[in-house]
Image (tube, rainbow, N blue to C red):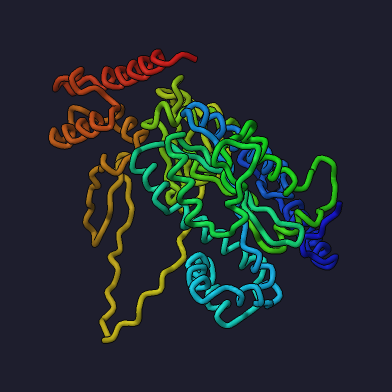
Amino acid sequence: MNYKYGLSSHDLKYCRDKIDGQKSYLSNNHFHTSTGQVKSLLDVSFSANISERYYSQLSNKINTMSDLAKSQNLKPVFLTITLDGFFRGLLTANYSKWDRLSVTQQDEYLRHIPNNEVHGFLRDKIKERIKFTIKDCYNVLAFQWYRYSSGYAFKKIKKDGKQFIYLKAAEPHKDGVPHFHVLLWIPETYFESFKKDFQRYFPAPQNHKPIENGNEGDTKGFQTAIHNPVGYIMKYATKSFMDLRTGEDLNYLQSWYIKHKIRRITTSHSTIPQWVYQKVFAIEKDWYHLTDLNIREPMLCEWNKEDDHFTLIEDNGRVLQYDRGVLTLRYLGSDRVIQQLGEFKDTPKTQPRKLEPVPSTWMKPTQPKKYIDVYIDGDHSLLHNGVIFKLTPQPLKMSNFELLNYWQNIDFETVNNAHLEHLRNILVDRGLIIGEDYGYDYSHDEKCYGHYVDLLDERVEEYDF
C-alpha cells in the first residue's frame, strides 16, 4: 500500500522540486581538475538521493562494521525504540491522553523528554500545551538514545576497554511518527546490563512486551535472536533512498526524511573517519582494507581534520597522503609521485569567529607582532624589525611521516647533539626505530632509515595475507 506518512501531495511536490533543484545546481557547476579534466559538482557528490556514491559508501561501511564485529567476536542485539501513544495526540495539541496520567507519572515521564538547546525545550512545550512537530518526536527519541548511550552499560564497556559497534536507523510509522531501529554489536557478557539500561531509558510499554519467537527474556524492543543482522538494518536503509538506477521519482517515505530533516542512518565511530574515506575514495575505495590497516598498524595511520591532513602508510610501503586539497600516492623511500589529485588550498578551513565579551573597562588595543616568513638555503626563518630568527624544528609537533622524513634528511654533522638526542628519543618512544640498534653513532643516516624499512618488513612478515 502507498502510505503517505503524514505528508500531503504539496509536501511531496516540494521535496521533489528541492531534489531536482539540487541536482540542477550540481550538474551546471563545473571545475577543472589538476590534470585538466572538466568535472561537475555532481560527479564528486556524496549526497543521498543525488549520487549513487552515497549508497555504495553506506553499504561498504555497514559491511565493514559487520565484518569487524565478527572478527572481534561481538554478538548482535536488535533494538526497536518507539514512543508512547500520547505523542500522537501532541501532534495536534491533543493532551487528553497525557492528562490521564497522574501527576507522579507525568513528573516521572518528563525525565525522558528533553529541555535543552540541542534537542529542544519540549518540557516547556508540554507545560504550555503547545502542538508538537514530527521533528520534536524525533528529538525525544534522540534524547532518550543519548541518555542510553551515556548510561552505565556503555560507560562500563568503555571502561573495560571492550569494543562495541552500532547502526541506528530512523523510520516513520504510517502516520509519520518516528521510531528507531538499532543494530548493536557487543560482547555477550554485557547483554544483561544493556537490557537493564534499555528498560530504564525507554519508557514506552511497547518496547518491553515479550515476544514468542526469540531467546528467553527477549522483548519487542530488545532482541538477541538475530540470524541476519546486516539484512535487518539494510532493509530499512534501502527503502529510505531513491533508486537512482531506475530513475524513479521521490516517494512519500523518502520525502518524509527531507521534509522533516531527519537522518536516515547514524553509526558509532568507525576506525577510519568518514571524512578521510571520502577524500581517499578517488584512489582507495575499500573501507574494509583501510579499517584493517588501522587496526594492525595504528602507528602508521594518522589524521587531523582541523589541519585538513592525513597520512596512511601500508605494509608494502604504499603511502596515501592528503594535505589541504591534494591527494598523493607514492611509496616510502621514494620521491616519485605515482598519482596526484586535487589542488592545494592556501589555508585550511577557517573556524567560525568567536565573539569576545565586551570589556567592562577601556583597554588600549595591542598591536600584533608582524613577522615575515623568509627561507635561507631552504630553512624556514622569521624576519622581525630587521632581525632574522632561525626556527628550530619541533619534533614533538611532527606527524610520524614528517618525523621519519626529518630523521632521514637531517645533517648529523652540523645538528646540535641535544636536539638530535631529543629527536631520537621521540622516534624510539613512538616505536618508529629501535634505539638499541643505533648506539650513539649518528653519522649514518642511511643506516637509520634503512633499519626503519627493515622494521616495516619484519612487521609485514608477522601477518599472513
